[in-house]
Length: 205
Image (tube, rainbow, N blue to C red; front, side, top):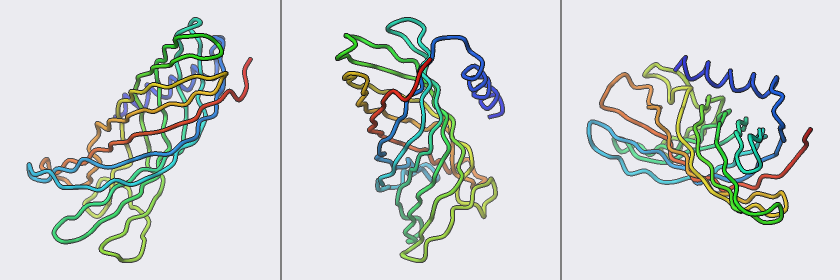
């Protein structure tokens, strides 16, 4: 995990000091989220939830068609499931740093964009509800008393339509990190997110 953090810090430094032509874009949208949960080799049925995301994307153009696009966003995810007759609903909030490679086809007026890359997230808040009880703040950490681990990493894949500088896109986020704090190799919890976004140019130089 530390190697991933160093990698993303290097990307953020590149954003700050790079002389590559760069555009800053705002991004906002909603998430259709769930978790993939497996306990002792048995898949647990989970229900989806909705969330939002917003932030900024740095589009560093390598040429007219290809760009490196790191960013930073606030994003909310979540899911509902049942364990040992206890109904659980979680809605974590993350600071997320995606780094995507983007390829564009078409003209400045209308075009198609496809992108792929990875992300790292850090949990900063959210709520958890058990069996209709009161909402409690999610406890992040690695102990069995915690609800979720802080860090998530994963892969992104998406596509969109670019119309006069406005990008309307859909993407799928495949979480690779085990979010379960339970100290047991038989418990696996991973984020699954479909995001619908609108991205527009904010500034440039």
